[in-house]
Length: 116
Image 1 (cartoon, rainbow, N blue to C red):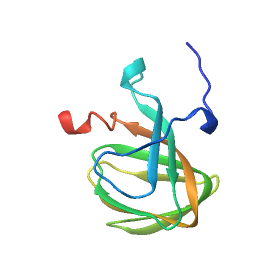
Image 2 (cartoon, one colour; image 1 turned 90 degrees about the vertical axis):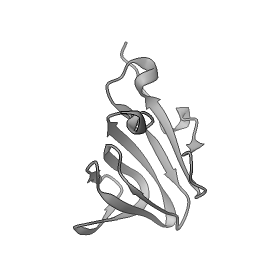
Image 3 (cartoon, rainbow, N blue to C red; image 1 turned 90 degrees about the horizontal axis):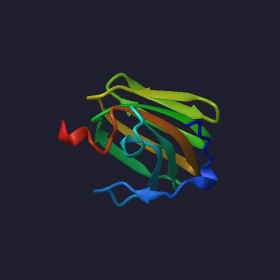
Image 4 (spheres, rainbow, N blue to C red; image 1 turned 30 degrees about the horizontal axis):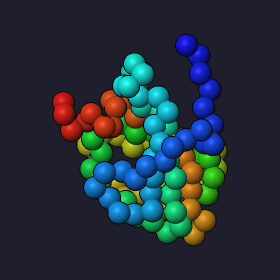
């Protein structure tokens, strides 16, 4: 079935194990048979999240700005830009003073990545 999703459709939840003002809302995932996870992320102003990626992750910045620091240096994404983060890399994602909203795609599903 063809479907369309908007940020206004999202039910944002804090990722397990983190206390920052960073939330995710999966719109397509394993629950509805999707081979990938697609959703929206919301970052409050000046938030930082550091982790080793359990999945390949692509973010499209919809509003605000994010900086991602990895082994090869730092990139900053603004509205309309795409940031790719490969599985296994240690990254630090930082929002700027205006916060940020992203659309993301992960492979495999990020909720199941620890159970492979």
